Length: 618
Image (cartoon, rainbow, N blue to C red):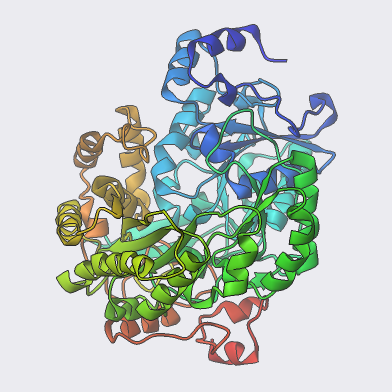
């Protein structure tokens, strides 16, 4: 039952459904009958957090335990936060309405660097000290997981531990250990020293970082028994891995208002800019029957009329034809749409297109990423313009008239010709529509072009590369627009200043913790939202802390430099990334993992499809 003071302020905010809880399939437990309470925090709005599959999985995983209760917590929007602070209402869990600070574990999932100030804001709103050293008690323990923890050094001062890799196994092991140490009355330091021995657990306070005079990292040294390198956790068998049979159904519209079921993890492609494609290796697939059973269970428990089959490259799933043939037997009569995000133009056959068109046409989205073949070879995209045009022609013949194309600017070796190539390829897609005799009658074509700016990320072959400046991003965006000559082409662009800050924190070190805290104290939060971004405040915060942000973005790093994340082991060898970087400048491509093992290092994890040849190449 929510306190009356919360009910009163809901009348004064937009979208009160963000803050009420009580949705279908939310889990309510008797707090007196559990040993552990977990506040699972997403550092953005309810609509975004409720669309995140990882949060749904781990929420159900924790609540499947009889000894634990997991509640959801989202960042309150500006209007709600003002009301909460003015009325003295602390951040609370949606299931109980009780303060987050009373939880044993405050767990953040972090997929985007621009959520860092929201983490601090949520801790402060909860009445919890920001810095780990100022939280001497074992509980509440602040932990984090997600893609960002592959280099969480800018946030190292604020978290007690992070979980690297797949969370389905390691999270339960951490919770088991917390339960033991809570019952023993252990100190926080006793617990952290033991937690650091669990594979996949990183305890920042057990590592000392030294710097050179030029502010590059000199050394990273573990102590108190912590491992020199922290190795990510990998769930090897996705068929037996925990998967929820129901999702919480929101009261309000969310970003992805549908059922989502994962079909495999990892990627075989090796696009050199794509962090996820390397972090989640090796490739591991679920069997079609397991996927279908999970889809049916969640559909029956939620009533959603769309099921999204989720992965980094859905058309690379070997069991896709079998899965669709079986699923359509019941999804078509039930009027349930099956959506396939993350499709590639080089393996998108006609029969697959017809199958996903069976209930209603979902949008077709493809990612050429670069406008010329030369630059696609640099980034190892391994698709041709001919494949793009052949695929869209097939789509137009099948009744589609709208296509979205994803591109990037700021890629290494990019020239004006490459930027012009983006406009030329988009125009070629438009032309393909009008010369297609089987195109939809009485309709015009719409080609949406989304242009992101490259943010070099850790554990990619481009982790050593400079990022172009915000001014240069604007210049290249304007150049692209000058080449677009059709009203059938619409272009959306990323905000240069946001990409710049993302780049700073993606490859940042511990010195940035003071900058994040200073910026937050000066009003920065929801930095990923264009209307909330306070770029000048950020720049003032860098200056007041004596840090040049361009140090992290604008310089090319030498292969010999110690990187802030060098004590993290995601299974991808540094030697492999160096080779891929050199091949990029030589404009040489690397075949997919199924064509030829490139010896990335993931084989040493002994999971997925990596074979003996891969082990020999590591």
